[in-house]
Structure formats: structure tokens, C-alpha cells
Amino acid sequence: MALTGWSDSNFLSRAAVVGTEPFFVIGWCNLANAATFRNLYGQGAVDTGANYRTVLFYNNNLGVVESYDGTNDGLAVGAAHPANTWHILGAAFTSGSSRSVWVNADARVDNTTAVTVGAGTETRIGKGVNDGIPFTTAGGIAEVSVWDSTGMSLANLDSLVVKIRAGGNPININAEAAQPWTAKLTTYVLDSANTLTDLSGNGNNFTMQGTLTNFASHPTIDAVTSSAINLMGQIIL
Image (cartoon, one colour):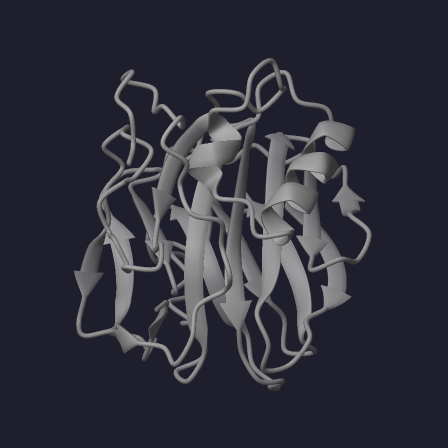
């Protein structure tokens, strides 16, 4: 049922970087308009103000992807999110000089500022690693997936976004034959059971910090098909 209650002390974390360039991260969000920053996903060096990647909503409700190395700031600013309804926020970190953001059904926005992000130590969902700013307390986060985008063009990622936005289950999409995203799912958490164990089978599990509770609803996502097979060759029922 998604998770809510995000705050400075209530978030998800993993003591390692989840996602190595090139990679793509996407999650479902449900939140009201607000004049604050709201972090969905972040990775990097904790509380240093440098060497981080983040995906968030700005204080004008615009979706943003950002890479910062302490000197150079690569920032792609997308469209505003719809209020109080489920929608997607996605971001691609294609290389040190390219990143992109998607908000719901709006067109992708790209940025090509050269940024070399140093080694990180943590990944968070619902809170930034660089500024500690959380997602909104009353908002919901669900269905967060991370993909290895090696070999994927931006057009391929546009197509992947369309599939996920239509309610495609990442496990089913990952098992599609002969597609650019086939077997590229590296992390998947927060399904309808709010699972924190990585459903991709890659062991990128998250831990709840503090106390998060069930949101009132969950985005409508396809059920996992009996033929969907994870990367370890096991059938996911």
C-alpha cells in the first residue's frame, strides 16, 4: 500500500550506492503541491554537500534530477507533478555529462553539464543524502526500481517510462524477450506489500529508518506473471 510518514528520521536506506552510471531510477509518487524540496531518491557521500546524485521535486513542484561534485552542478528540471494523484518521477544518469528527468506523461528533459561524482557510501529513498531533506510527510512513495541502462538510448528509456507509467510490473518488463531493458532490472522495492527486500534478486535490500506507515492507496500495477523469471533463473509466482 505504498509508504508514508517521511521525515528527517523516517526513510529507507542502504549502506551502499545503488546504481552505477549509466543507470535509470523511477518511482511512483502521490503528494500535494508544496513550496518545499521533497527528495525521492538520493545516493552519494552523506551530508558532505558534494558528490551526490538525487531525484526530487523542487519547491515549485517541478521534477528534478541532479548530479553535484562539489564544483559542477548538473541539473535537469522537468514538469510539475499533478497533485494528490499517483504519478511517476524518473531519472537517468547516463554519464558524467548527461542526465534526464521524466515527470508523469510530460516530455523528457535533458542536461549535459559535465559532472564527475565521487564515490558514495549510501542510498536513500524518501530523503536526500546531501541535504537530509525528506519527502513530504503525508505523501506516498511506491514501486521504486533501478535499472542498468547500459546500451539503452534515450528513446529506449522513453519507451521504458511509458511501460512503467502504464502500470507495467518491473519484474514482467525485465523478463520481456529481446528488448533493450531485458534482464537490466537491478533493484525493485516497495511493491503493493511494501517489500524492502530487493525483488530483482540482486540483494540491494533497504532498511527502514524510524517508522513509516501504509499510505491510503497504491498505484495500479500489473500482477507478476507466472512466466516472469528473475536473473537467478527462478520463476516468480
